[in-house]
Image (cartoon, rainbow, N blue to C red):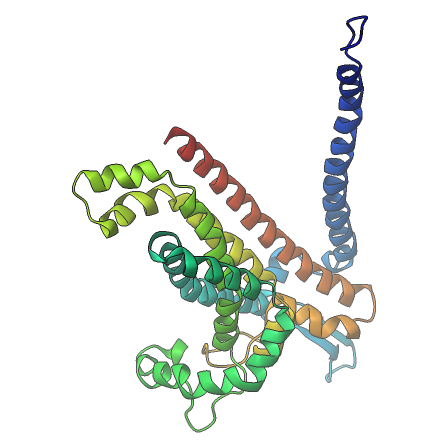
Length: 328
């Protein structure tokens, strides 16, 4: 405050507020503009395909054929995303079914049972694993993990459940070197740290008064976790799993190295397949002409819409969780 009674610092802060708001508006607008640019690119470059094939046919056709028709010598072009969508969905589902229960239980242990001297380094280790590049996981899977899975888990499932369920059968005389199941198992390892880290934060945000109040009524520690902590954090845990699912759907390099990249829908999970991302990675260098490029961009558009849908579901889930936490 000066001798005239005027606060210059307040005036300076007031004049800075509009500038700060403009900077924030520009940053938010840049993110929205980037989304519009990506969407426009995908729609524009996929347009040549829609001139010869409908979107419904593209999504439901399992064949992807480019070449010369031997009968009349004409160019043969059939583009179908069904087999890639199948490989992406199945491998991601396998990953979530394996990683979700392990990750949530691991987060419960870190929050509720692990002593601080153990919980802190374990949490740091989980975050460190999440930062490992995917190509390293892929190299490990190609060099060692695939053989161990083939001779242990895959063999056990194929020799027991596979006798009843054809989708889990395998020829013991000639097991495949790359399979859809291995891609899903590798994805489970990759998304597990994400599920643990995000679930841990949601579990920690549950008010401790809820635990103490329930235990004070005579419940055990496990009953408090089962009846209070997990239900309260349920929406957040679902959001953690959905975030991990989003990463699994879009994973490229590691999946490309182990899924086999075989055309068509495999008759068993222990046979090679392909995902949307692996198909794009394998064929983008061979695309010649606007139609072939448009087909690959159409795959990217399909993947983009899947990821966007999952992101919207996560946002809605987190908003609901915030409302529940505020009421609690």
